[in-house]
Length: 175
Image 1 (cartoon, rainbow, N blue to C red):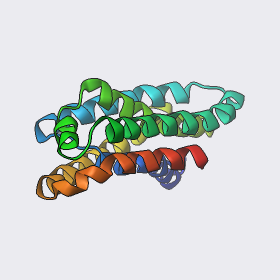
Image 2 (cartoon, one colour):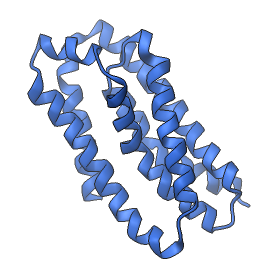
Image 3 (tube, one colour):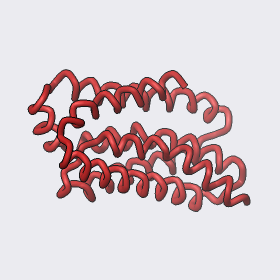
């Protein structure tokens, strides 16, 4: 088993978590709750992916990116059109558990496909799932921490955050 390949694959399927965490405004008091909800979503999706069959996996890989991208675009659009200016800052501070769950699904679908692929290559199922989930959690926690600290000092940037989520969704759909 090539540990470097496992870690690089886990990192590549977790990269969108970092960008998503930067673009999510999570109030400091909700940071741990948000990361835990997203982590549980990713963990469940990774376990699911590890159990899928080979032919299903190739087919599902394309749909995972499509579904994850569409979810991110919807989240971004809702935040752009539902609120404007100062209302957006207030609305983002009042995120609900369901919002974190949707983000977890959107970023966790890549983990599902990565877990599937690595388990087919003979990697230990538990090691694969835990590696991908831990990297998702680490990248999310760091990026949410950066975002929270940065947004507290530069609230004008908050207006661009939903657009960033939307653009990540477009990228996932197209690539």
